[in-house]
Length: 164
Image (tube, rainbow, N blue to C red):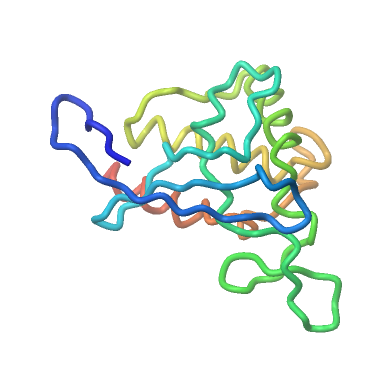
């Protein structure tokens, strides 16, 4: 994949990683663009997030980076998140549910800018994390998925380092 960087900078070549989710449709694949210099990007393309009736540009939602329903095989009903940390097996959530919840959050006033600056990407990512952590109980409930059910914390750190 090639894309022209902002303000006439050089072309960045990226590679695409496709992942399949077990127990989901064959069309549910995840594409993540990571530049060759190793930097993460929150402006990755994610075909797992359906547009549906959402006004949001779902291609701006970073991919989860974690396959749901991978058991820890430790005799408990828990599944594996980032670095094998225990997460509920219904995390990360269904992409359609996530888009619906994120749309509701944005409708209530949460920012979800469409720009490509590190600041805009970080603001979008924070909206995604808030949505993730409240996905099953609604805004402010804290009933949802932990951040370790995605790779978003690493992406958040990368974006924060770009703001310094």
